[in-house]
Length: 270
Ligand code: PTJ
Image 1 (cartoon, helix red, strand yellow):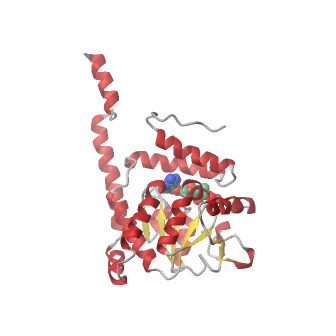
Image 2: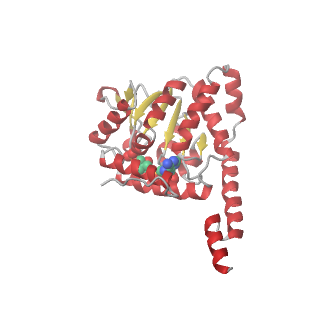
Image 3: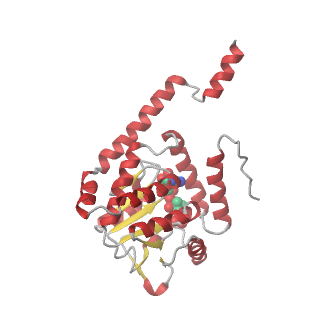
């Protein structure tokens, strides 16, 4: 049974995202653990303030510049990504000339097919990671994510990995690939290992990446290279953590931070 999200609900957007994942789960796209992973992401998003903060915006610019200068950029798609932003992923792939590859942690042929169908409905013309004749392994990766496409992640120089588990990011980086992570948790192993970590909700981040790709597409390689060079992931993660610290510090002074709650209590006291 799917819930109709009431328009006026104060958390309508958050509920709509949950509904997308539940539908994705029912379609066989999202793994059970994907629902749990989303909860962890939501908690960090709540703390960050449910907005794209400046360090995330800087990471997005660097990430898009890196993809535009890559020789073989690949977007790795898992269940949550497919359920939440299928059209946007297809658009981004077109804008930065990247391949799309299905690569999942909780592997089954049925799930791969369900994700493929969803991406095709979203307009994807070529999807890697589904045809056994191109399948190979990256032995350094211990999970089922080690099965990759020879035309995709295997030969990629830049891989975008939204909502990732840390092991693969570490392995890909050690293999010399540049990894762009989208992860709301700045402390995760993925966030720490990635070349560029975008600490933002995937539903805000991928449309913004498309906007920036439209803006940067015409720039020359040197200028794009400078954007990438200037970016320092460690420093940027420090800024994210500082944002969280300062926001929580501000909120700790207020106790109740929802203005409407404060008003009601004020009226009751008067
Ligand atoms: O589809 P599969 O089989 O590949 O499985 C996907 C999951 C997500 C289950 C798998 O990759 C996994 O277990 O991931 P983890 O280790 O739970 O990490 C997921 C990370 O994504 C966590 O750090 C969350 O904070 C983060 N996250 C969750 N939802 C979002 C998010 N980051 C950005 N946007 C979100 N909406």
